[in-house]
Length: 244
Ligand SMILES: NC(=O)c1ccc[n+]([C@@H]2O[C@H](COP(=O)([O-])OP(=O)(O)OC[C@H]3O[C@@H](n4cnc5c(N)ncnc54)[C@H](OP(=O)(O)O)[C@@H]3O)[C@@H](O)[C@H]2O)c1
Image (tube, rainbow, N blue to C red):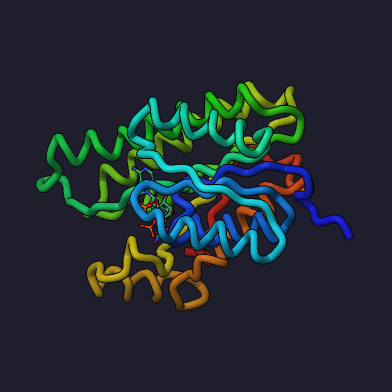
């Protein structure tokens, strides 16, 4: 039986670890050929691609810092060159350093917004390559609505992605391309492990299920947004936060 994403090519940024890895593995199980993007964890990216190939799927890896616009252009071009086309872009790569307003430095601010800038131009470049049925999904954060005091710049950098995604959705709808965001609550990954115990406790208590999200909880929602069944869903922020 043919799988729902057979024939599609997906680029998942930041797929060497955490949520991105779970998304890459899930889209591959759904039949997509997957470009596993990473920045510094080459061995981990190779492991993700190897696992997909061992299961009978197709995958490759590509390196680059999303804050670097030349790298963004190269990542997109490499995906098309090696896998033949681009149908799905999942903008997942991001960094999550915390700092309350008084601790924010210019470097902290510029670094987070450079990643947001790279996300914008990844979407612009991907949209130029995609045809009917294309899917652009950006992983933002429940931090946009909860506005935690120790992450004002992170939350704002994700809010910007939500705002320009909505604008992209208006332009790309007539070409049959959907543009959405998925906004997780606290999810059990390296980004939050080792973080303040109080944050993890309040995250557990604050959602309906009284646990942290697992990466597959988020990946399964992203897979739906990437599917044909989600063709009428665009310009949305899907709150993947367990009812936070
Ligand atoms: N975990 C949470 O609680 C949570 C909650 C809400 C939203 N999110 C969002 O979910 C997404 C994934 O987070 P995660 O928790 O899975 O993070 P993670 O475990 O820290 O993994 C981050 C991934 O992004 C890559 N990456 C980081 N900075 C990059 C850059 N400048 N350029 C290219 N790649 C970069 C890393 O690559 P290398 O390892 O190869 O360097 C890694 O693959 C992020 O957008 C994050 O903001 C996470």
